[in-house]
Image (cartoon, rainbow, N blue to C red; front, side, top):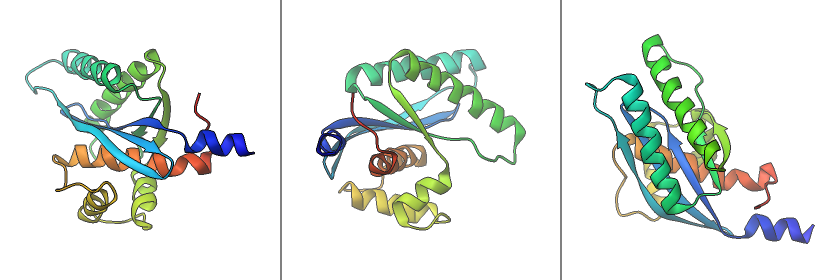
Length: 174
C-alpha cells in the first residue's frame, strides 16, 4: 500500500489536449505530489486553405515535437460527446484520431475526459461557464493571466483534471 502511494505522489508530466482541426490547445503540467506546475502551453493552428490531410499531418508533427521536448508520461484529451454541427464533429474527430495515434506511437498513456467531467473536477459544478473555468485555471496554476486562446486554457483544464483524477483512478507511474 505504501509503495502505491509513493508512486502516485512521485513526479509526472501530463499533457492536456483540446483537439481541433483549426486550433488544437495543448499544455504540459508537472504533478509532484500535490503540487501542479505548468511547464509549457500553447496551441497548434492550421491554415484553413490547407487540405484536411495537410492539417492533420501538421497537428501530428507539432505534437511529436511537444512530446519529444517535454516527455509526458500521460496525456488527457477531451472526449467527443455531442456536436450540433455534423461537419465540425467529423473534423474534430479526424484531428482527435491523429492525436491519439501520435500519442500511442510515442508511448504516452491516454485518458479521455468529457467537458462535463473537466468542469466538475475544477469547479465542482459540471455546468460551469467558460469564464469560471478559465479563472479557476489561472488560480490553481498561479498564472498571471488567463491563457489564450480558449483552446489553450481548455488544455490546461484537461491536464489539471487528469492530475487530480490520478488518485481516484489508482494510477501508478511506470
